[in-house]
Amino acid sequence: NAGVTQTPKFQVLKTGQSMTLQCAQDMNHNSMYWYRQDPGMGLRLIYYSASEGTTDKGEVPNGYNVSRLNKREFSLRLESAAPSQTSVYFCASREGVYNEQFFGPGTRLTVL
Amino acid sequence: AQKITQTQPGMFVQEKEAVTLDCTYDTSDPSYGLFWYKQPSSGEMIFLIYQGSYDQQNATEGRYSLNFQKARKSANLVISASQLGDSAMYFCAMRELSGGYQKVTFGTGTKLQVIP
Image 1 (spheres, each protein chain N blue to C red):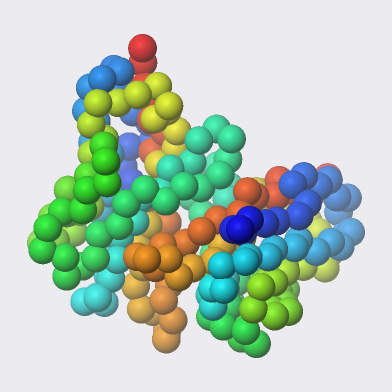
Image 2: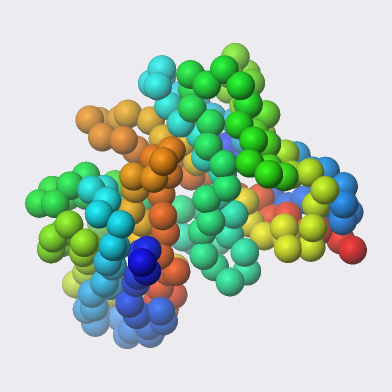
């Protein structure tokens, strides 16, 4: 039981490059989330998926797209990376005993 | 208006002492939930404790307790008998129904440093 896994752990991109962050959970949770964490700003929701086949925008969706490939996997795509997207990205799934979220280890992304 | 406010960017506490981390919230949803998460320097987010809006008693989990004052809309985390391993960022979060889905909002965090 690995919980929530994310790949890659670290990534450096040049402005304009694209990439996909992968996330998978093995807890059979319906809800999955993508957050970004910037210094002094806590975690801000980019996109979420309430169930397989559905996705919705969160607080800061511009510049990102997502795919809920199946119940396990939820990917985040940057089509044309910008320096403002330098951040730590966390994937989470939810449906714990208290409906708490379970987080992946994070991806540290730097855009030059 | 901020949904979750953590007014203490940083806190120091002596080892073995108790410390309170503040959190206030704002919501119109009568059925909401409050969470605290710990983020050590290694970066992972660890769930600590939960309080539901209808819970009559304050939540406790080991050395963690949540001082829930509903009328004041506050949900402070109390850590008793602080240990060096408690040094970390602490985030307060709230789950509420917003726009048809269960939205979770995080505060900006408090950095706790435990002094030996």
